[in-house]
Amino acid sequence: MTLARINDLAAHYTAGDTNHHALDGVSLDIAPGQILGVVGESGCGKSTMASVLSLNPGPSLRITSGTMTIDGTEVDLADTESHRRLRGGTVALLPQGALNALNPTRRVGALAYDILAAGDKRIKRAEAMERTASRLEALDLPPRVLRSYPHQLSGGMRQRVVTALATLRNPRLLVADEPSSALDVSSQRLLVDLLRRLVSDGLVDGIVFITHDVALLSELADRIAVMYAGRVVEEAPSRALVDEPHHPYSQALLASVLVPEPGTRGRRVTGIPGSPPDLKVPIAGCPFAPRCDHALEVCEQVRPPRNAADARVDACWKNAETEEALHVG
Image (tube, rainbow, N blue to C red; front, side, top):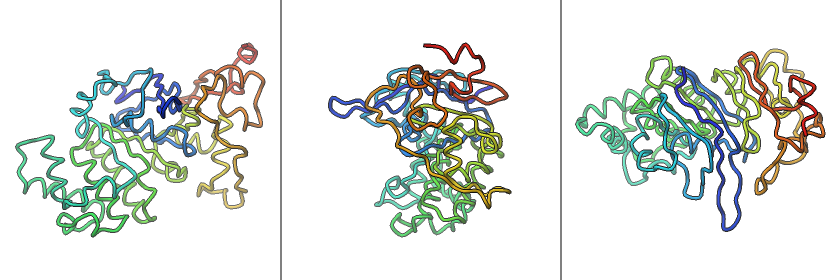
């Protein structure tokens, strides 16, 4: 059973006469009750995918191919009017920029009432405040926050307020775009605990959690998808991916950060050589090939196959199962 699915999604940003290819054939499934983590370097397409999944694509983003379904119903990615009806209750975005996400001229309680009233015109203000206070309390925020303006709150408090507001209508799918980046360690723990509880209590059916923090994903996510240059290069159960990454980029990414796991204390952290590719030009083969120590001749010429086995998928010629596949092209 699938809660949400994107299939072969491609999109680019338009700047004058130039196209920047942000997504290149992305396919992902989110199962009910699942937290899917998405990780990768800056510019790999994580936030672009979040904007499409949450039905908040920017005006310069052009979706050129692919489909998206929620609860088995296909979403018309070109119909922005239908997106408005789905946002908030069916799918919601938990953004990174907490201060920019809040209206500085309105109190938190007023913002909460507007969000709840958008889904239920009959809701009473007292009921809305009670519901919001309960969600704020779960994030260790006092009821007085309802009477506060955003500028009266610290950065960490604002991020927690945005988390509470994004989940007030208990959306089926919550897309969290790097919500922990501005939080201290204690606030991160509260956020992780709340997201888990939202799923376990059935208030949210599934979460896509996007971050640079592999260590955080290793304890939060059920599955992790690794993105590079607009593609998903590997997806696997989180424990399996952290313990034994298959794709060379996943291996390099995990080697460049220190995941607090037993046995890692004496491990040397290494950087990834080179730079991500220029996405103005479509890439025929594997985008990681110029930085990869295991690159074959075919890697720069032909798009890698999707190798699926044991509940994990990777896109790498090195891991292709047959010798015949290695000589394509």
